[in-house]
Length: 156
Image 1: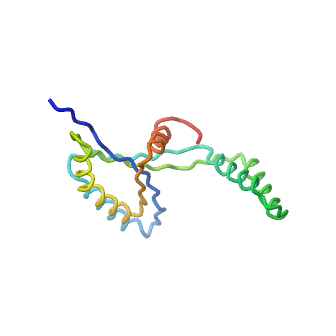
Image 2: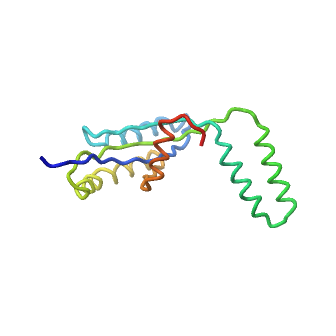
Image 3: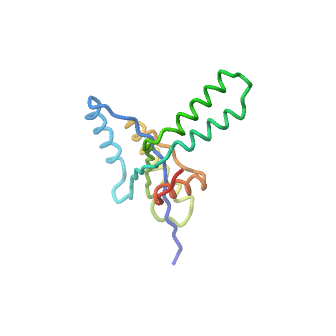
């Protein structure tokens, strides 16, 4: 009995906001995405909310301030932005969107790559057509972070 491994692909999507006027066309494009997935192929989408996206903005502002060239107007502007964000107690939620497609069980990575070539380029093309802006994760740290975001309640 030969050992088979399961393969799949995780990606992040950044869907554009759709106006009411665009909704019907968007639904047709999404139908094309779904219809382009081969039968019996696992395909899952996950959207998750993240509280406190301000932390990354505050860190960015501090990084920029540390590299100050001494321009007082710029420095005052950065301090003003930082203070405004810190003092804002309103609840802010940002969203992350992910998609996973299973490539099946294969004996070798080369066999899985053949399946990838048969399925993924068309899926990506259709997702881009639907303005989902997919980005395939390839780095294992990026993949781990995505799964932590999806399945844990955490502040990033």
